[in-house]
Length: 183
Image 1 (cartoon, rainbow, N blue to C red):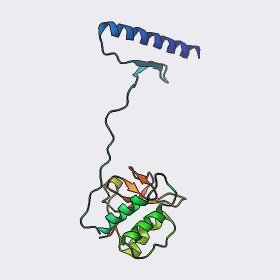
Image 2 (cartoon, rainbow, N blue to C red; image 1 turned 180 degrees about the vertical axis):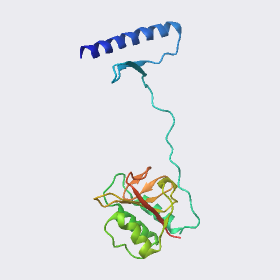
Image 3 (cartoon, rainbow, N blue to C red; image 1 turned 90 degrees about the vertical axis):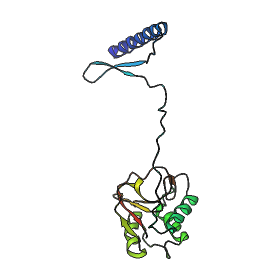
């Protein structure tokens, strides 16, 4: 413990000495954090003193003209009704948006979100698209996710993100079962 505190003290002293020397010589000094790695070697790393200026930008959804335009209306309805945080009712909210937009004519009967894709294909004329990246999903498509031992998750792709019972800029972290849409 004494070695670590001594090393930190020496690092701080070296840092202060370097800072004062840099001020007098007009150098652009970047402070360094000095520590010992797991091999016992003394290493230094630059101190981060500001946030990254580049903003992370997620791609917007593309409009696929071959898809039913009612899917875009479903995305809008779902977005209007969504909350800021999950209510654990994703499949319920997506069902309501699909029904309200007229994409489907009867309420789906499955209880679990991970079963949504199979029912949409079997009973409502949806097709499973050959898309594996949620960001590449077209506007209005329904994304279904698996979750071992749980209900799964379902969401609709909006222009700037994903929506179910809540809005999100990023897709679910669960394994994607498939992307479904109606032509």
